[in-house]
Image 1 (cartoon, rainbow, N blue to C red):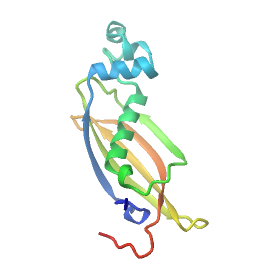
Image 2 (image 1 turned 90 degrees about the horizontal axis):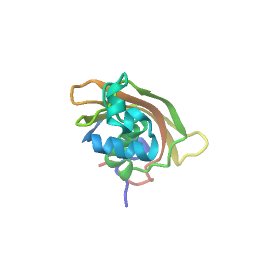
Image 3 (image 1 turned 90 degrees about the vertical axis):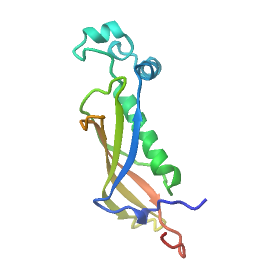
Length: 155
């Protein structure tokens, strides 16, 4: 399969809208029971008494939703070679049942590899907002992408 996204397709200042995804309170509780069973994620009564005032999604649930949106919108059709890691994750507001997460992918920097000419690194910031336009989470990271094969034209 020919990739839609190669290293050369990313440039600083690029903004890619990755759509939206809604989450229910049941989804939040199910994820948290499996991976982050803190009371304000899994227990409605305890969450209501917490400083959050109700059930909220685990930050890792929010990040997982964001990752799925990036995979669906870019990585599933990319020459992705994985990631050496993240530079930062910030949970700015709680994600609650009934919220709709919207995601933008901003390319902040690109650099072709000097030692491996078949790849380059793309730095990006993922910005998730809720249905009110309030920032929920940001992720700063980097990904390695294969270079466009010689002779293959841009579409």
